[in-house]
Image (cartoon, rainbow, N blue to C red; front, side, top):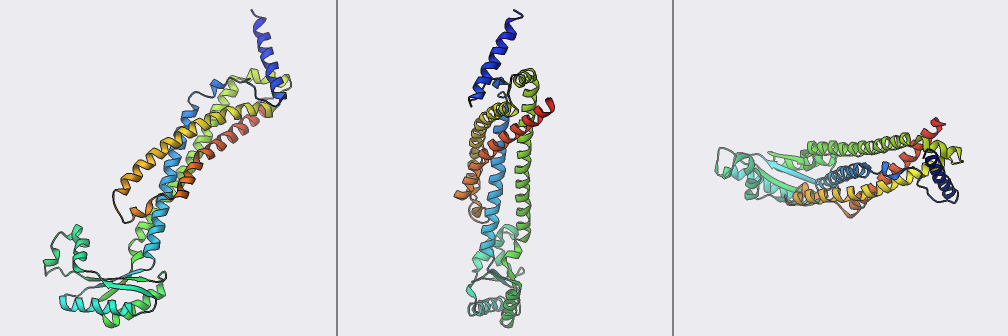
Length: 313
């Protein structure tokens, strides 16, 4: 019995080397040792990466849509206690802006709409209270993006006919929001990078454990003429199969979560949220996440095996 085991093992190695010399793959290393929880770890990493990437892309679309919409917009507030004078100044301010070159449109916002805008903060029917004067608003759109020089010129033109008017760029109101969106985008990118490192670390640990468990087999393979590249290819193939399976599962899980939250946010209606929907090219980027995970896992496995074999011999 003591002689049969070495002979059987030697025959297995010899058959494996013959297969390798012919350009195929060999089952010299037990593949079940690499399988185990590895595909599920990769699936979790890919799913989290897909969710983080989708969040970053949605935030980018939100910021881009809001910036495009507000880059050429200005708002005129006429703060005047006398209702008749307030209405007059708003009307002449709109007429002056409409006659100014470079202004696409300008109109006075109706009082009912103004009251709807302030109702969440001041309550309903606040417009009926004469002790709380509601400013008149003029909404204007420029043909080109607004800059500081143009804003200053428009302020001078409006104040010539409406001394109580205040002209503001609409984009300045959301500057803190844009700053928060940029921070969240950076956070999403950081999470994607960290998840990539975590995936590589998981593959590295799994490969090292398998190398340690099969050290005797690998040494005999080398004694019989096997090369580092041939052994590394076995590990690389096994990790690639695990990564493909785990990546597919992770992509499916991630897309389910993204579609669920996308539908919930879509129910909120228009506004900033409405501009954050994913485009077709965003979905293409998400589809590339598992492919990138497979490539990262296979490269990590090959580099880990080659470096370990060099130290082993």
